[in-house]
Image (cartoon, rainbow, N blue to C red):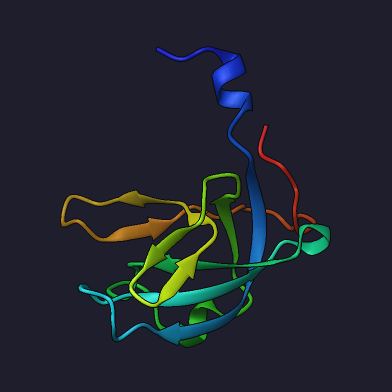
Length: 109
């Protein structure tokens, strides 16, 4: 079990995907994302969501990301945030997204 104080240490914010690229250097099919968090800036993320999402449908999509993990180098790419999602039984990932319009950078609480 964790405490509410532990949970409050995790900075989870909403951002909008503004760029999607294939990531051929990754071991598994992956996209490189640029995500706009409003006043918190534009950050990068590596995501294995190729099976369920086409690049075109990701453009402009709002996503929920952990923004205070250390950056992680994945091959030649630096992933700055963790884009969240839910694992299905087959191992594919469904993105966690807000169901109403919300300002970029809004914090999950």
